[in-house]
Image (cartoon, rainbow, N blue to C red; front, top):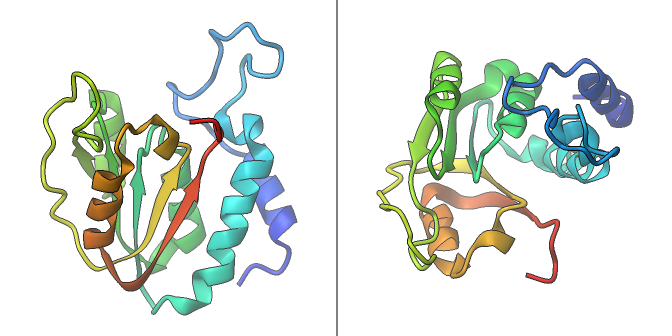
Length: 176
């Protein structure tokens, strides 16, 4: 149990070592250049972190977590740090993960499922069955606004969650 969530999260972000693909060194906007997504979206990710802590006690001794639309992988890193020995399975689900991403997460025992999560999308790629089940928690962070037909993705999440599992959804674009 974390006694001071704000301090824990603040320390986590300040000491966070981003993946090589995560820094926005190519972005000329002052608020984005050379910053990772935890720094750019601090308040939003702190809120997600708080939601996870609010429901943490409802999980058994072990927990299974999936991150749908997992790029760039920062939330998986946070989940692995937060649940350490309690995390029994972790899955990253998304479209076109590159070799570096897959290599990095396979090293950490994270199942990478590279698949289309919206088959209705124009020029959609191949969609495969996720073949995961009984997950406790699903994260769909800043992804749903990119889906033409979110029902397919939500159905897949529902099939993968156990009864009374949890889904946390965020969007940074409410107009979509």
